[in-house]
Structure formats: C-alpha cells, structure tokens
Image (cartoon, rainbow, N blue to C red; front, side, top):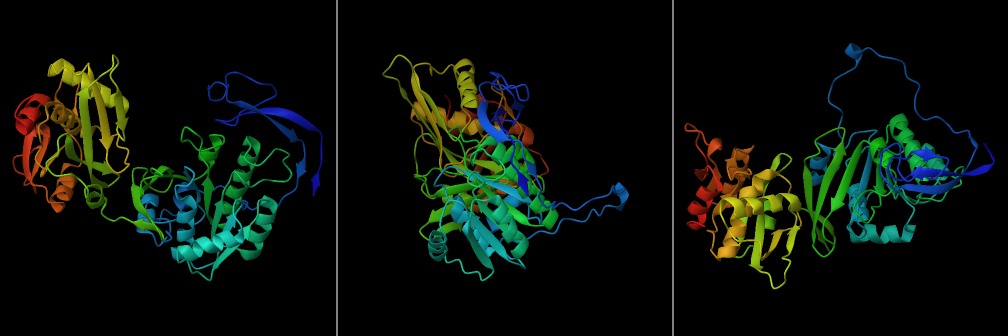
Length: 455
C-alpha cells in the first residue's frame, strides 16, 4: 500500500545524484558545474517486498573462494568481454549510441545463451509484434524466451515473482518508472530508485540482468553517475553508424578485466562474431601506399593488427588543421612536437590527418613509433614495405622505449604474413628466438633511417 503525501521541488545533480533543496551552480558532491535539475517528488510511504535475503556476518576464512559459476552466453566475443561468461546475480548495463545495435545484441543473447531456465525480455520501447519481427530476422528460436512490454516496474516485479526467470533483459532503463515516485521516467530520481530495485532482484533472486541504457551527446551514459556505480558491469557498444564493424568493451567489470573487447560485424541477419579482427582490419589495405603502417596493439589479452593512415599536406590557410580519428589527439600533438624539435621537420604549415582504420580507438603508447613513421612517410612521399610492422613508445627526447607483450604481438604478425618488425632495442634479448626478422632501434632517427632511408 502506498500513502500519498505532500509534493515538493528538489534539485538533483545529474552526475552524482546529490540532492539539494535549492539550485546550486557547483555540486558539493562531485564538483561539476551546472548539473542540477529540478524535479517534483512527494513524500510517500512505500511498502514493498524486500527481495534481499537477511544476512549475518561471516568470517572471511569460512567464505568459499571457488571461482564463480559462469553462464555460457553462446557468443564467444561476449564471453571474452565478460571474463569467461555471465555471472548469476550480476547486474549489467549495456550502453551505446542510438541505432548501433544494442537491441539486436540483446535479442541474439536471448536466443543463444545456454541457460537452464526461462528468459524474460522486457521492452518499454517496442511492442511484442516488433520484437517478434526482430526475433524472426535474427532467427531466434527459444521456447524459454518470454516477452513483456511494460514500463511500470511494479508490474514487472510481479511477473518476475511469477515466472522466476534466470535471465532478465530490460530495454531500456530510461523508459521504466516506479509509480510511487512522481517524477517522469528517465529523471534522476526514477533512474536511481529503479536501478536500486533492479539490483535487489539480481542479488536476492540470483537473476542475471542486462539493462540497456541510453547515452548523451558526449557519449556518456544518460542519468546520474551513481547508475554506473550501482551495477556490476558497464558494457559499451560502439562503432560508426555508417561502418559495419561494432566494438563491445567493458568500462567496468567486477568479475573480469576491463581491457578486453569483442568485435562484431553488422550484417543483414544480425551481428556476426569476428574471431580474427586483424584479418578484417587489414583486408582492404592498399599495397605500396604512402603514409600507411601496420601496428600490433593489445586489446586486453588479444593482440590486434590495425592500419594507421596519415596524410600530411601543405595548408592553404593561415591556421593548419590537426585531426585524429581513433588515436589520442594530445599524444599525436606531442609526437608532432618531437618531429619538429628533434628531426627539424617543418610541420607548422602542414595540414595533418591521422586515422585508425576500422573504427577502433587506440590509446596505448606502443603505437607512437608507427604514428611518427606514417607522418614522415606521407610528408616525404616515401613508401613503406608492406610486410613490416612497427611498434615502440616514443619519449620527448626522441628515444624509443620498451613495450609490453612483444612476443604476443610478433606471433600475431607472423600469422598475418608479416616478415619484419621494427621494435625498441631494449626489448631484444640475445638468447631469445623471435618468429619474425626483428630489428631494434634506440631512437626516432634510427627508425626513420632504417625504414625510410633517412628523414
């Protein structure tokens, strides 16, 4: 039973959920500016069933330390990102841009997961007929899959208690609401309270729950930052809408690494897993091109070969342009300064464009040397051999520093048919045998002399 009370206006911080009786320019909780929004709430007594079991303190020595039982999702790339599979009782948030394929991924998950129990797919955005059409397009056939189109969280809770599913998919968290809260669906208070209730379902009933979330213009999850703190795993589905590649990465994972990625290709009949991303990313690489290099980067425990493309051209305007796609802009600016200072290259009047092919976003420093070689190759119109990979971190004095996981990167390059690797001198060991012809360099000057014959 819910008792209605007097309504009042309260201000909430959209970043951290801090509550204030009046509007504030700066949030005392998180320190961000202009994040407070006004919402109308009412004081109500909410009598709901507590789903979390009562617990007693347990000695640390008596707690079982066995590995958590993992549920096979039937999608190897999804398992990789989660750390081996889905954990019972885990609450996962799946976010991504509109139209990127979040609903497609969750529907395929419902059709492939190896689960001894029922699956409840709750949609607050589509009708049951629309979901049926998507399931037919994706060839999803599962007699244990049940569809519910509902926005009221209390109604959803009754169906959960009746059906007792092992997996709950909720699409999306911004569309559901608790009737005892007077604010609109998607507001700070609704998101916070709804997520808290869903968390009780996951932990109290041992239900694995996947919640789909919207994102804002800047790419962050819509709603208060506390939403990301409450869930166990935050998954981000990214990619260019006009590019058929999709990347699934974990921004937070209490049960595994946050460095792993899953690579998919959007096709007519759904998402197709890509077990060898290197082959896909290099499939359309032009032969004998200028300003194109291949660098092996690490995505979690998996090495991935990607193509870096650079274009350097004289600027027709007074202010030259600097643009990067997939690489860190500030680090690229630092590498340009190293080339100007140490190699005396006149880049101040040049338009510079850098692109990571395939839509990947790479932020590891091991691609520094590859960026520099690509830039110089484009500027001086010199070709780079097609069977060479380049890797190494570059310091401000122009030195090439050692990197990690060299052997894994070289093995992946050998599989793709590369013959030579330019690596930091400090990584080489006399007694070790390498799968490729490895040549070490100490600084940028040596690397350019070796690859391009001087700069």
